[in-house]
Structure formats: structure tokens, C-alpha cells
Length: 421
Length: 89
Image (cartoon, rainbow over all chains, first blue to last red):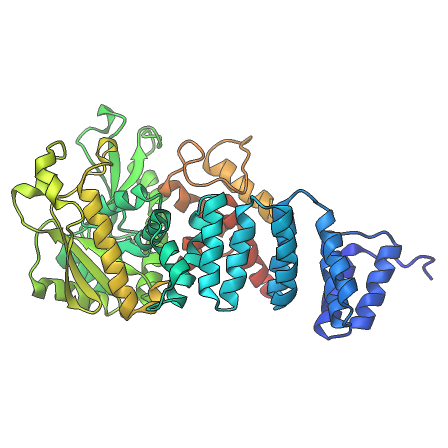
């Protein structure tokens, strides 16, 4: 017989949770009392204790337990806000609002409190109030990507009937940038070349995708989709291709990954700086191939889920029939959305001079979007952009932003699933 | 680190980073993102994900990969997937 029952925190926490789940509040309260007597303490116990008191209908004790939790880190706003998120998780928005009002008074200059307020309003479908909370956040601390989900919820919630606050919020330049960054992320490159990858980088996005730094002929891509990506990057088809006859010539020389069957080429970052070139090509290939296997798997998921939109850049302007042929092939894997980007005019504009303002001034923001199908668009820009460090202010970047914004809005109208909220 | 992430996972992810960046004394933090370490680019990200899959016996889906933006997100994702596998271990 044990003299003292060895009550451990690791046992108490799951036991209380289980009792709460079974609505055995009295038993849970008794166990918590025992734990306190044994001097077992964890912030989480206070939260569980608040749940127990709420279950027993003792609001005063519930509030006391929550305040006890907050006193553990009295100057940490994020710790205080854990109470709000805990209460929201429990579905107790009313108590959450009571505590949030107190926290806002305690931390008047924190942006996080306004963000939590907006979240609470969104839960109650009070989108105008949520917009007001985010505008308050903008006043004390800049809106950022952490607010993107709330902004999208508000935009969706007020669709077609935004009032003062929502109008003001959605028109804010920061909000436009946040939404644009999100839009760039919801497009996945199908290559052509690396330009779209650089545009995503320009917006601080580095998504992983097979074609972001790669390309293959359009007819081969059609074949790849029709074959359901079979045999791609397999042992029989994978190879390395140096981008110059002699890789010893410079640090920037690189081994490309090459799929012989589909004529696919991709950057690998396997340069002299990153890879020991004394290894055999077979060894280097063996270390690189799993990357492409994973990215192929990822593409397969994305095509099957069909939530994102794909973007294919074509240096050669395609006919409508050619665009449809590529789209049809993609749709054998899922009901996919495609934006094909090409030039307004083939020819000299292909290499527009970024240093000549007269060449570019009247073209900014002038992207052209043509709807072939609800899920197939052709966008046109006036020049290609190389993505070089010195080119980040190239005027054509504005055209791309306008294009992505318009195409995203178009797809969103027809396919609301494109926006993950 | 996030208390929801177990010691095993955070230590495992740290090991993955140390091996991937060939630096046995590397220190990582939950808020670190792509570019915060020399040589940390999108190619390295694939390497890190593959190494985590091997280390924890998990497999990431595309949507899960898209949600990972920081070391903390990666740890949380590994933890979630590790926990989901618990009944099968």
C-alpha cells in the first residue's frame, strides 16, 4: 500500500480533460483540488479549472481561474490573449469579449488585441466591426500578413455590400499589398521559364513547386498531363545536364536536372559552391532526384485538388486552340484553372528597355486579360522581366501585379474554393 | 519553442537542420524563415522536408507544405503528423 498517492501533472491534465469531456465537472473539480494540495502547478491547469467552474455554473470562480492564468506572465500580451483563444475554442465568445475588453485596456498599443477583436467579430459575422478593429490595429501597428486571413474573411463577409469600415479597410494600400501577396501564392507556376518565380519572390513568397525554376516544351507538358505524370523523373528518364561544356569554368555554372522523356529542364542549385564536383554525376543525380520526386508528388496533389490556379508563361503567343489543348490536358487530372501569360505583341517588346521611360510609362497597369473559359484565361503583358536584382523596379512588374489581381478576382468569382479562409 | 511541440520533435528538427546545413552546432529558432541562414533557399527547403519525412516516418501533403513558413510551423506540422500516426505505431 502506498503511503502517498503519486499524483503527477502528466496524469492530472489528461484525466481532467477526460472528465470534462464526459461533463463530470464535480469529479474534475475534486481532482484539481487534489492537484493544488500537492502543489502541482501548470498554467494549463488554470484554463482547465476555468472550464470546470464554467461547467458548474460558477462564473466568479471561472473568471478567477482565467485571471490566475494571466498573472503568470502579467506583462506578456500574447500570454493574456491565450485566454481569448482558449475561450473562442470553447465557443464562449461572450466571456472572451469580457476579457478582451480588459486586455485592450491593459495593452492599449498592442496590435494583437485588435487582431483578436477582429477575429472575435468575424466569428460572430460582424464584418463591419471586424474591419473597424483592423483599422484600429493599422493605427497602432501596421497590418501585416498575419491579418491576411481576417481581411479575406471580411472581404468575403461583406461581398457586394461593404460599408464605411470595410470600404476603408479594403482600400488601404497595405491591405492591397497583403491581398496581392496572397493572390501570388495561390498561383502555381507551370514554367515556361523562371519569371513567375521571381515575381513571387518580389512579393516575399517562396512556394515550392516543380516548375517554378523549370521549363519544358508545351507539347511535352500536354503529354505529361495526359500520362498522369507517369514515369516523370524516374530512374530511366532522369539525367543531369551541365549548363556549360566545362563546369570548372565558374562558380555560377550548374548542373540542370533533365527528364529525357519529357524534355524537362530545371535549375538545381547544384553549383560548384554547393556541391562537391569531385563526386560522380551518378552520385549527384542520386542526391538530386528525390527533390524532383517530391515536387512531382506535390504537383500531382495540387492538380488533383484543383484549388490553386496554374500559370503558364509562353514566350511564343499561342492560338486559342493551343491554349485549350493545354488546359484540356491539365483537366484530365482535375478541374483546374489556368492563366496563360504571353506578350501583347510578339517582337521587339519581347526585350523592352527598362531604362527607357518612354518605352514603359504608358504601359504600367495595362495588363490585358482575355477569358477563354471560366477557368482558362490568357493574360498579356508588354514585356518580359528577367528578375535580375537591378530590375525589381521594372515598370512591367506593375502590369504583372494588375494581371494577377484581375485573374485572381475572376477565378475567385467562379471558384470560391480558391481562397482558403 | 512552442510547448505543443514535444522535445523529440524539436530535437529531431534541429538535427535535420544541422545535417542539412552541415553545421553540428547550428542553433535554430521557431521564427526563422527561408533566407535566415546562409544557403537556405527553396532547394534547401525540399531537402529539409525530405529529411523530416525520413526522420519521423511521415509524408507531407502539398497543402501541408504550403502552410509551412517558419521553423516553428515545420515543428508543429511534424508534431501533428507524428501524433496522427501514434495509433499505428
